[in-house]
Image (cartoon, rainbow, N blue to C red; front, side, top):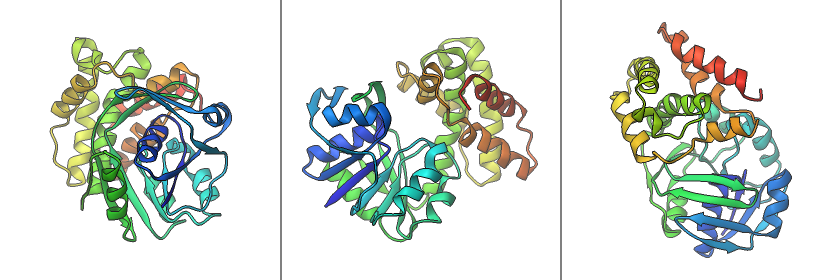
Length: 287
C-alpha cells in the first residue's frame, strides 16, 4: 500500500514517519527548504528519538491513500495539484472550518479527520513529537474512513471511525479559536492562558462567543472547561499559530476565528471579541 503525505511539515512528517516505521511505503510531499531537508533525511525528537531516510518529492504522486496536512489557506492549490494524479482515498487532518467543501469538490472518496497528536517543527527536516493523542475519522464522501483507521492503528496510533466528525471539527476549531490567537498575540505557551488572570479573562470572552455558535448548531459543550483542560494538558506547547507569527508566516486565523465570525453573522450572534482578535492576528501575521 502506497501512502503519501501532502504537506509534510510538522504534523504531516510525524504521521508519515510513524506510518513508515510500520512498514508502509510513504512518500513525503513538501516544498522549499523542508523539501530540501527531507531529501537528506527526517529527524524526530521528543517522545521518539530517531532519524530515518524518507522518500521526498515536491509533487503529488499516484497513491492508495493521500493525507492532506497543508496549512488551511493552501488547501485549494494543494488539492488542485493532487487531483491531477490518482490520489486514492483522501484524508484531511487539517485544522480549520470549511476545508471539507473545497476538498469534496475534487475527490469522490474523502475522509475528514480530527487529531490531537502534537508536533512542532524545530527546524527544516526536524520534527518534535510533542504529544500523543487520538484521531477521529469520518466518511465525508465515499467510504474510506475504515481503511484510514486501519492504517493509523496498525502504525501504533489511536484512531477511531465516528459518525459525528463535523461536530468534532467545530469543537476543535472552537478550542483553537480561544488558545491559538492568545498565544500568538502574547507570545506565550498554552499553559499561560490558565496561569495568568488577564489572559484567562480574554479566553473566557472568546469562549463564550464560540460556545453560542456551537449551541446554535446543536453542539453542546462547556467550552471554558474544555479550553482549561486542553491548556493545562498542553501547557508546555507552543501553538502552531504562535510559531507561524514568530516565523513571519501567514496564520490559519481566517479558518478558525474568522470562520466563527462568519458563522455567527449567519446565525445572528454577536461575535465582536472574536472579530477583533481575528483582525489583530491578521495584522501581525503575514497575510
